[in-house]
Image 1 (tube, helix red, strand yellow):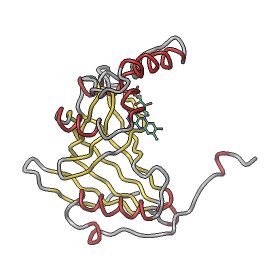
Image 2 (cartoon, rainbow, N blue to C red):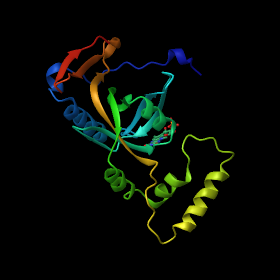
Image 3 (cartoon, rainbow, N blue to C red):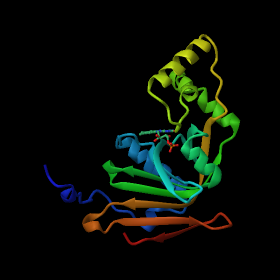
Image 4 (tube, rainbow, N blue to C red):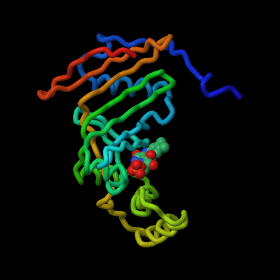
Length: 213
Ligand SMILES: Cc1cc2nc3c(=O)[nH]c(=O)nc-3n(C[C@H](O)[C@H](O)[C@H](O)COP(=O)(O)O)c2cc1C
């Protein structure tokens, strides 16, 4: 078995320049997202979400992107989870996508707020029944004695809602990250990667600059 220190990839697929990214980073994100879908990137909408707690300690985990627009990047979760509690005390957060098949990374930083109850309802009700029950059955991020706690919860909930509509729990819903900074990274040979970054000013205008890799 080779040493971990010997694992490395030289990136040669593509390049990225200032002209190509245009002036609207959300539109360019959508373009890269479509290209990642076409390249059959595994779990293309999986993104690392980093949040910070009240003691300034960071926490990171994967969540799934469920929508993108000029308003921002939307995902769904349990509002009482660790991430939910972090966001309640500190709305600043970061997202990272890594699409290895395209040798691309996108980093997004900004502030998070809850989506409307109507938007959470709309998404909750298109989820499969099992996922809707799961939102009730799992007290996300709480310590549980054993797995059977979840299975028992699920069994009881399935019986309670048999043949009935399952309402959305108030503690489950969407968040939207409003981007203030978006960086596009394209791997290049010899670690001389391309990094083009956008930053939003107080009037909502994006500026663009290149960063050293
Ligand atoms: C591929 C993948 C997708 C995931 N998607 C979500 C998601 O959309 N929402 C969510 O709450 N957790 C999702 N999770 C689980 C989270 O990574 C995490 O375990 C959970 O949200 C609890 O995080 P927290 O304790 O930091 O709040 C996903 C995990 C993986 C590996």
